[in-house]
Length: 213
Image (cartoon, rainbow, N blue to C red; front, side, top):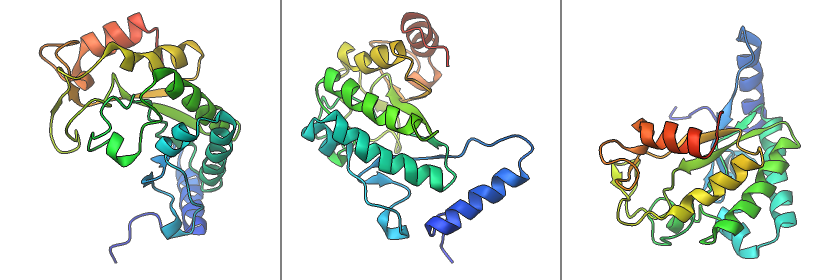
């Protein structure tokens, strides 16, 4: 039929309930629900509309962000999805980035604003029992290519400030999980992309930033 596994709110809720019933241990069921262009539970399938990270960042009102994220969290929880593969905490250092900036997936070019927005987003999810993911570590915001299509080199464009959202949110205990970026960054590792790099995952993320999740 060409249908995937999302057709309507009732169908998704039934699917996740069935999956949990059959599972010997409770399942973590995850979806990409960033808001805006990246929303798996979207209006096309009868779910409420969402607002992109860029729109939230431009509005610059954490209370509004909390309210919008709460709608998403309630939608996820009602559908039986208990983990959100969001928020994007990439700093919008390249607004023309084909996979982040140009899709409205970053809150801001200012790391402090990214932290403020992400904090509100995460707290709204936690209020409804949904855990979250910071992505894409150690920073995909400066890329000039899409890492879904091949290996992307951010060596010449990446900046240390892209670590600031992770440092702050890990410090506040708000990092339920972290998704690594399949980017090559010779500033951090001259041989391996971030996903496969001991220098990035163990030395930087675990030891320097203190992440143990």
